[in-house]
Length: 196
Image 1 (cartoon, rainbow, N blue to C red):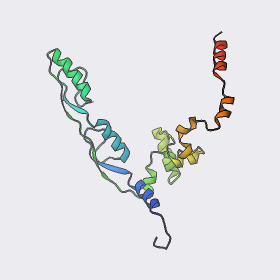
Image 2: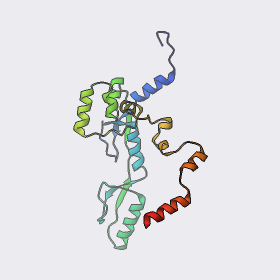
Image 3: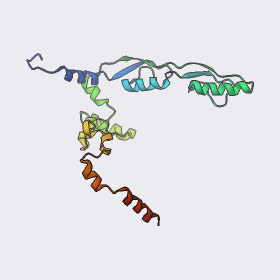
Image 4: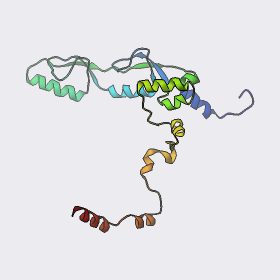
């Protein structure tokens, strides 16, 4: 912009979103994260959603099913406590499960590009041998969810009609489709012949 070139704001928004994708864990709560661990923002949301509304076992009492520190649902707790009460045993003591809290991190473009979930995308940016070696050592699998890695391997990009869900659909004239597909009588005749 300083050089007189007009750039649409959406381009800046995409870049800044990528740079602010990671968060640093301040308090892990009852999730599996560690303090000061840098994780993807959406992984944090997923982990918090998973334990939200659940209970943390403080004292398992006389339960053989539950363990101290286990995250359980209200339904599981109710079932276990009712079983213990019927047998006149000590019930399970719980508290609400704590979700993790984190603070936003602003990463540089290079670091943000190298810390994507896709190692193919990261390898195409910089430090190719380092990224590929680390991926091989850790036995990583790239599920080809993003645009960049699909372009690199020559697949359809997962956007628009390339979304994997749409590959199951047949698009065309209904009359032509009916002339190609076998009728119900033909299908039943084929089944009878296969069974005999």
